[in-house]
Image (tube, rainbow, N blue to C red; front, side):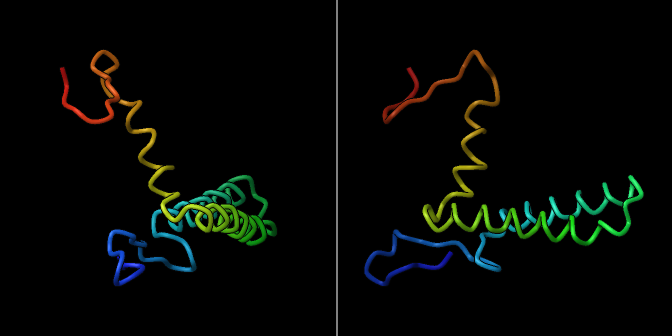
Length: 100
């Protein structure tokens, strides 16, 4: 993580590659790989590169627009669902304070 300012060190940005945080870039690469593999499985070999490239570029643009608005978009995308998983009986969402 790099501090965005020497004065406000609590404002931090993640390391990025191609303008995206690493987890979102991995999602783009995974989508492109799934598209390429599905084209190979269905024997559409001439469409393999355009489909993989289109998926990568399309997802990159989608995530890049979201990250420009909220630099922690990947955290909210990945970690928000973790609250809803787990034991349904003991789920509590508290704002401050401990468990009662």
